[in-house]
Amino acid sequence: MNIVDLGLIGYDEAEAMQLETLSSVLSDEKPNTLFILEHPKVITLGRQGGAENLLVDENLLRNESIELVQTTRGGNITCHFPGQLVAYPIWRVEKRPGGMKKFFHDMEEAVINTCAHFGVTTQRRPGHPGVWVDEARKICSMGIGVRRWVTYHGLALNVGRDVSLFNKITLCGIQGATPTSLSQEAGRDIEIEEAKHVFAQEFRKAFADSAVASDQAPQE
Image 1 (cartoon, rainbow, N blue to C red):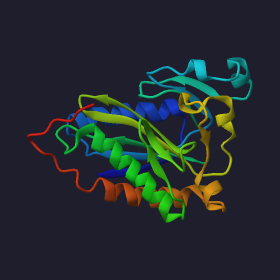
Image 2: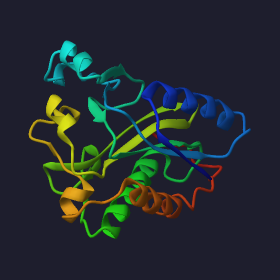
Image 3: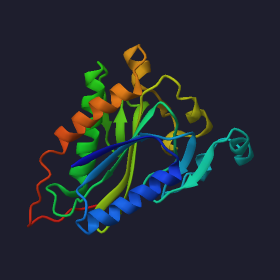
Image 4: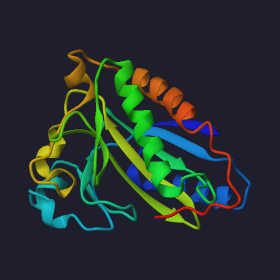
């Protein structure tokens, strides 16, 4: 696999790089690739909608230089900002053992183990992709797009203490859900570069057994 750190990069630029890489993975010109990065402040809407869960006027977003973007990923509304680790796996899942369900499980596993490295215990919440500290506090959101069994988009793990951008939305459209972060839960400031390094290691471990099984097709 190829892991590339894009640093702080605009949402549209990162999406263009994902689509270019997706085409290369589809044509076998490039291996499975993971982009890790941060975005400037942006609120994104998923294929399942999300505009109804925007709690502020769009003019206010423009005045505060916050983008509002319609995306092609699954899921509802979420947001990205500096201090949040975003990971986009451009990953071939065709014939991968376990299909899409295992793909999400392995992404969650990489996040759970990353959090554990920093002394933060997290869990899955049935019916809600992502990673939670408990039934209400969400530390990582997930949503992907798929073209011909190659994924793009991915996950967002809150690392820094400031998660105030979430105040402008109903988190993932889930009533009662509140955001938290690695730094908040660990009780100390965790640097984004350290979190990236640990996550990259845990992602490699979780996806090390990505050999295909010729007789098994993935299920969405």
